[in-house]
Image 1 (cartoon, one colour):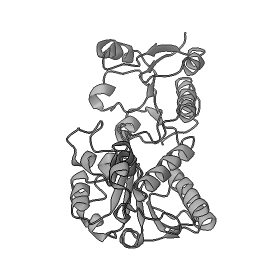
Image 2 (tube, one colour; image 1 turned 45 degrees about the vertical axis):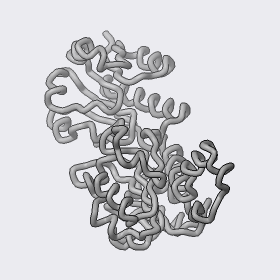
Image 3 (cartoon, one colour; image 1 turned 180 degrees about the horizontal axis):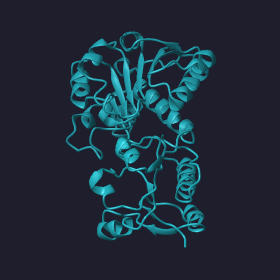
Length: 319
């Protein structure tokens, strides 16, 4: 008999067919609308595939046969890791396959914020250019030959450093839990304290995972230490940043601009002051959102899932 698994995120038929070869698949692309059926399937499931759903004690109690939870994301702040370990449940994520795509998104945010792309796009489209012309007050700032500070030099951080160093001749500073000697050698990245990075960087990019230690890692104190001409970019998790402090820093001209792919609450409220600021570029958490990369992430998640329910080694285990 094939092991039963639950897939709770929309997947291509190609990926679903791969899982169906060795598993009985219960598919809930809109699990919130089918929550009772989803919970019923979870009671018999040995594996789960998706992303974003918080597996706390209450939900895990609904899944007594669970062997493995597979995230189709690099982040796993939705998982209670100590509790999973306690219950003997394996967990996996999808690192590596999204590094290039997310690094592209971050570079786009840096460029758009620095050169005021979205602001000037609206200026042209709403007739401002034809009516008033273009003035020096609308100039942006250069990206090339500036200093980029990366907080969190993991796979995505190193891929970003590569683009910034070779593509834009940027100087790279980084702060991480441990030294990344490979990035230091390949991209001339310099390891430094958080305060030194904040004080010296023209662009500050946070790429840390969300944990109890990193929640609101960047707050009022950190924004005050940044250059007034600095561009702040967050493509990690919204809660890594104190959003209220960011808003206040922008309003007080303590930082020049921001590029955000993530927010404390997602989707963010339409009343969020960040959405009214012309010097803030906002995206709907689309760092890895290309068809090619999402397919790779789904396939890797599926391979982890089938391995886990059949007692094999996970390809990309979290622990």
